[in-house]
Length: 353
Ligand SMILES: *Cc1c(COP(=O)(O)O)cnc(C)c1O
Image (cartoon, rainbow, N blue to C red; front, side, top):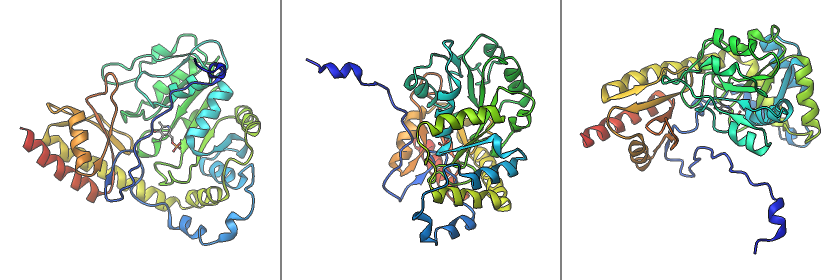
C-alpha cells in the first residue's frame, strides 16, 4: 500500500535540459552556448578572492543599474534573476494568477508547460501554422496571460514586431511576456514598446549572446509597477538569489559592448556559412535569427543523424515531439567546429545514399 503522505507530494514532470557530457573531447552543439568566451574584463574579476567572502547585495543594484543604462530605461524598470529561467518562473508566479488559461505556442521553449504544471496554471497551446509562424489571431481569445519567445525556440524563427505589437495590444487585460533569449542574434526587440504598453514584460539572458550560461544571469524589463510586483514575490522567496561573482562579472560584460557585438557578429556570420554548406547535402534550415539552426534532411530521418553524430562525438539536439521529430537543432559553434560537423555530415550522407 502507498503511504498516505504520497498524496501530498507535488508530482511534476521536470524539464529535461540538453546533455552536458563529461567527456570534454566532443563538439558540443546541443545547448546553444556561445563558443566564444565572455569579455576578457569578466575574467579579470575572478582574480580577487575577497569576492566570495561577503554576502551579495540583495538588490544586485550594480548590475541592475548597468542594464538599465544599457537599454536607456530607469533602474526601477529592471529585475534580475538567476538565469532567465528564474526570471520566467518568477514571472509565471507573479503574473499568471487567473482562472483563465495562459497561452503559448504548441512548438516553443519546453519549460513553459513545466512551470504552468508546477504552479498549477491552466494553459492552452495554439498551434503554429504550417510554416512554424505564430497565428496572431489565436491570441485574441480570453486568457490569463501570454508568453512566447522571439525569436522562437527551437525553430529560430523571428516574428516581426508589428505582429508582436498586435498581440500585446489585443491583450490589454493580461500580461504578455516576450522571451528574447536570442534577440541579439537577429530581429528588432520589443523593448521599444515598453513605455507604450503597461502589460508588456521583456525577458533577456546572459547565457547565449553574452557567453555566460555557467554564471546564470537573466533579467526582465517592464514598467516600475510590474517590476515591483516581481521583486515583492522574489523577496518573499529568497533574498540572496544572485551571487557576488555573477553581479560583478555581469556588470563587466555589459560594459564591454565592443567585444560583445564582435562575438555576436562572428556567430551570425558562421550561421550563414553553415546553412549554405549543408544545403548541397540535402538539408533545409528554417530561417534562423538565433545562434542555432533548425534543420531537416530530405530523406534521412533526423533521429538517425542525431544518433550517428553522437557516436562521432558531435552533440546536437533532437526533440522526439509531434511536428518537429524530423528536425535537428544545431547550435552554432566556431567555424572550425562547424567545418568538422559538415565534414562528418558529408561522409555520413554519402554512406547512406
Ligand atoms: C536558453 C533559454 C532560456 C533560459 O536561459 P537561461 O540560461 O536560464 O538564462 C529561456 N528561454 C529560452 C527561449 C531559451 O532558449
